[in-house]
Each structure stands twice: as structure tokens, then as C-alpha cells.
Amino acid sequence: MMETKKISKVDLIFEDIDPREILTRVKGMSATEIIEEVLESGLKGRGGAGFPTGMKWKFCSEEKEKDKYIVCNADEGEPGTFKDREILDRVAQKVYAGMTIAGKAVGAQTGIVYLRGEYKFLLPQLRAELEKFHKMIHELGFDFRIDFRIGSGAYICGEESALFESIEGRRGEPRNKPPYPTSSGLFGKPTSINNVETLVNSVIILKYGSEFYKKMGTQFSTGAKVFSVSGDTPKPGIYELELGMSLLEFVNEFGDGDTKAVQVGGAAGFCVPRKLFASTVIGFEGVPTGGSMKLFNSSRSMYNVLHNYLDFFNEESCGQCTPCRVGCQQLLKGVESVKRGESKSTYIDELVKLAATMKVASKCGLGQSVGNAFNSIVENFREEIIY
Ligand SMILES: Cc1cc2nc3c(=O)[nH]c(=O)nc-3n(C[C@H](O)[C@H](O)[C@H](O)COP(=O)(O)O)c2cc1C
Ligand code: SF4
Image 1 (cartoon, rainbow, N blue to C red):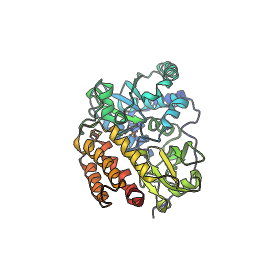
Image 2: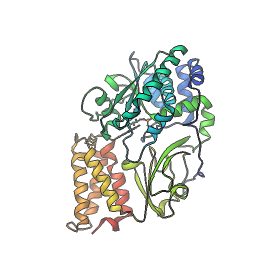
Image 3: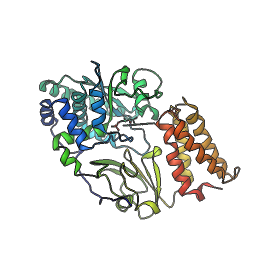
Image 4: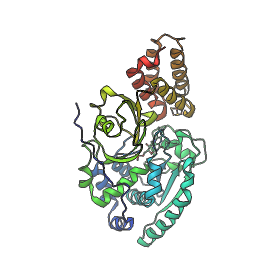
């Protein structure tokens, strides 16, 4: 069994700090020093995939192009995630500071915040904060400007290359990879795309140092994470917790005493049943999450939960590649027919194979991750899926 940490609440993301103080220090650092500090901290991206942020910045910094971009991914489309909205609402200056630090590290002069369409209501206050921020960094001598682009409510536009397509004015469809964004991203230029929370973490690291940061979390999941807690819980909301706790610790804190499963990481994540709570670590060495933690108690039908996720993927698949476009439809139709008793219960095993094929044959993370929820629900709650 993997080692787990006790549950530990921290208050760093929303802590009230003066970005001028950190940026003054950053101004005196070289790009290499910034990247080294972030690499040393072990910070991994908070958008879901968990790529080491320092490595991303290093790759982008090594590109020889003059024009480069920092993109802040504020699309936040994963079902059950609402922490980036809160971060932007409460500490926008720290998000801008993170973008400026990233800009200095990779050698970019332009930053773009791609804001989820449903968060448009935040725009007036974000623009007002940005005006103050631009004035401050101008005084400090930074050559960096930030602007906004607004999404239109498509989940796929949170995928980095579909997001670039959307900004460039085309349909939000993922690109082939490679090339990766650090060499050819927005407008074909080297781009570092980072989640809102990742950028604020870089500010924390630059303020307190990588040694302090590494003391939180575990060897493979350093630092803390903002969790969006929802579902059958008496305490729905936003919580910043050190990574590495067991799911049992989490459920003891946030459950209603009758939790039968937790969907960790949204529709793209895994459904963990009660019997695995104690042995499941929340972190990159166990079940990673972009923040979504949805609790289900015994009143919930796991068939309905699964149906809901499949419906979501069916709706949100961009349709560009066959394994995902047709696979999503077939998984949905398949569980419906098993539930109605029109297909034998063993048909589920065929659907599990289809989900496995989608994982290897789909073009982007959407189609590749449909099997996570599908397999973990049918494996653990088969009796609820069949007729
Ligand atoms: C379908 C899909 C949707 C995604 N949506 C988001 C999103 O809303 N926000 C986000 O930060 N990353 C999202 N990602 C991950 C991004 O592609 C990318 O990995 C991330 O922005 C990188 O930032 P990070 O390294 O700071 O995590 C999504 C990926 C996929 C496949
Ligand atoms: S996997 Fe799905 S969402 Fe991704 S490119 Fe293919 S069809 Fe589009």
C-alpha cells in the first residue's frame, strides 16, 4: 500500500500578498534561475495532465523564435471543477503575476487568458485588475502585456491545441501532436500554456522558495491543490489541501457518512468505490485530479452517474476522429441497451474493450479518457448497470 499523508489544509493560493514584492525580486533573476527554482519545487501542472511546469518553461525558453506566448488556460470545463473561477475572482493579480513570471522565464512578451464563456461576468473586474497590474509591471520595467479571449462553452476548447485553434478563429478541434505547444503553439509560435492554479503556484514558489514548497505533499506530488468538492457532502466548496492524502481521509472530512463512491477528476477521471478509499492516494502517484471531487452516497444510481458522463462525452466530442466520435455513441447506446435488457450483460465486456481501443486510438485526451470513468464504474458497480 502506498504511503499517505494526513489531511492538511493550507492557505497559500488565496493568501493576500503583494505581487509587486515578488515581481521586484523576479526582475533581478535570470530566466535560468526562475526555471531552476520551479523545476526544483517539483510543481506539476494543475490542469489535469500533470506535466512538470519547470520542464515546460525550459523547453519553451530553449526555442529560438522572437515571438512567444504565455496562455493561461481558464476554460475550466471539467464537470465538478469550479476552483479557477474562484481564483480569478479573488486573486486575479496573482494569476497575472504568474503569467509575468512565466513570460520572463520563457522569453515571451504576450500573455493571453482564455476565459470560459460562462465566466464572462468576471470580465469587467478582471479588466480593472489588469489595468492596475499593467501599470505596476510597467513601473517595474517588465515588457509584458496580457489580454483576454473568451470561449463559447465547448469542453474541448480546454484542450490546449483546440484552445489555440479557437483563439485563432477556427473550430475548436485538437491538432496532431507533435509538434507540442512549446515549439509550435499559438499562431505556430512557442507557447507555454498553463492552468490558472499552476500559474499561482509559481508565484508561491518564487515567494517562499522551492524548499518550502517541497515540504508539502509527497515526493511525486509536491505542494497543495485546490479541490472543488461537490455532490453528497455537507460541506460543498473550495478547499486547498496538501496532496498525498488517502481518499478515506478525504471522505472522513467531506463525506456525509454514507459515501459509496467518489468521482476523482471529473468526467475524465476515475470512480473510486468505498472498498478502495483507504488504499487510494490523491496525487500523481495515485489518482490525479484537476480538482473535481464529486461524492456519491448510497441513494445514487451509478447507472445514472455513468449515463450522465457518457451523455456529456457524446455531446462534447468534437467528432474529428472516428474512435471517439463513434465510440462515445456506442458506449452510450450499449449501456442503455444492457440496462433495458435488450443486450446480454456480457455485452459490457465488449464495451470495456471498445473503451480500451478508444484510449489508444483517439486523437486527444477527451477520447483517451472516456474509458477512465466507464471502466471504473462498470468494474465496481456492474450490478447497477445490468438489467
Ligand atoms: C478535453 C480536455 C479538456 C481540458 N480542459 C482543460 C481546462 O479546462 N483547463 C485546463 O487548465 N486544462 C485543461 N485541459 C488540459 C490542457 O490540455 C493542458 O494540459 C493544460 O492547460 C496545461 O496546463 P498545466 O500544465 O498547468 O496543467 C484539458 C484537456 C483535455 C483533453
Ligand atoms: S478524441 Fe474526440 S474530442 Fe479528441 S479529436 Fe478525436 S473526436 Fe475530437
